[in-house]
Image 1: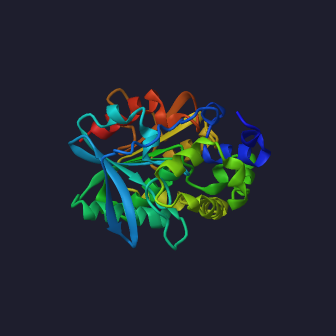
Image 2: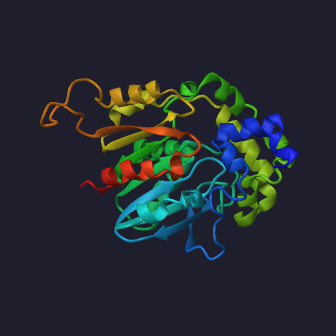
Length: 299
């Protein structure tokens, strides 16, 4: 590990984006996207959105975390794609999708996801996202409920002040000034290997910093979600487990004993707090697959 990787701001940045110490020392923690990836581009909302299709069956849109790409799901993708048509998306400015002249926001990227489904002539799909992608998945369900059959939100808080205070302060430091110090890091290596304009990385950092400094609160919208929802968090995530328990409560969870026949459990919400995991490894953990696949398989 070079000295670049231990500068305070870069360490803070990696923590803020969900990159573990183990990942920092790995040449490629997310699995560098193959040059022969089965990818396509869709012209939607003024952006050329990159996506890959893996497997066949009921469609699932799978959304990566900040500064990542669809390839970060590589370790679990084969299992998730069994009997399923996985649409792996590189969100605005990430991976093989070039940035455009608009801010990075969960709402705009959710609109891109809905437009992509229209482009693919898919009426309804399951949508699953991790971290930033979890926020995009949530906003897709809120803004375009007609296109979402089932929703999985992984390691994504539903309001900005749910993050631990020290994490929130770290997020506010992200910006283009970090670009040089990040040479040799896994996220920059991945970006430079696949991005249409590798020189845009400082611009992406600036936009991500602006995005991460913005306050938000989606809690008031949660009770209006009508499709089945699975909320997933690590037991040592960037926010306390009590936050996702609170979200679960807004979906009628945790109100009563379910009874011997399960009749008292919430009709459309499930909660999974995964033991022994952190924000930094939930996206590739077998435990995530173990809870998500049965939920997605349900009719």
